[in-house]
Length: 183
Image 1 (cartoon, rainbow, N blue to C red):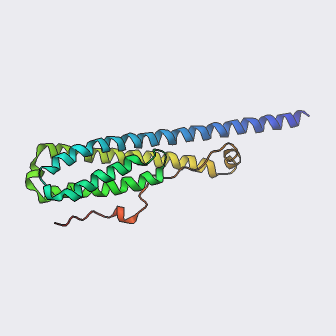
Image 2 (image 1 turned 180 degrees about the vertical axis):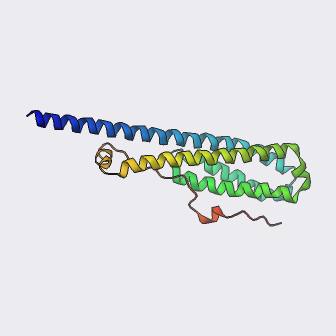
Image 3 (image 1 turned 90 degrees about the horizontal axis):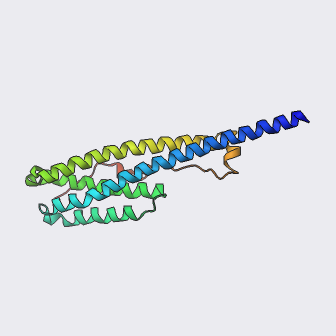
């Protein structure tokens, strides 16, 4: 009798231990996604200033500028929890932003403009911080995914509703390409 109770108590302690580890991993992934969300919001807030600065110099590049604004709005419209769709939308936006930055090469006055230089530096810093946030999120997602999938943790994860997290990555190979600008 005591042996059965002892085994049941050990099993209960084990389930509690695994459950708490899964909760901790899920919270880390959610906190990491929040960091990405903050960086994406900061970048989205910077884009209108960048576009307004470029507009004065590159009036005949209107379609490129409108594309960036449209892609920014599309990226902001994606629900925060939809990691895969957000990755696609942000990848397209990043590619369009690269084309805007390339415009500076064609417009020496724009390149020399202090506002543009400051915005460009801010955007570069933002992209670096976003990259760090992506790495942190993907690491937290990996840790959660390993806990959810490994035996015997998966025996606890399934019944308690823990599931894998998608990675925040570029899914379209074209998004990885260096943007080309044609005049």
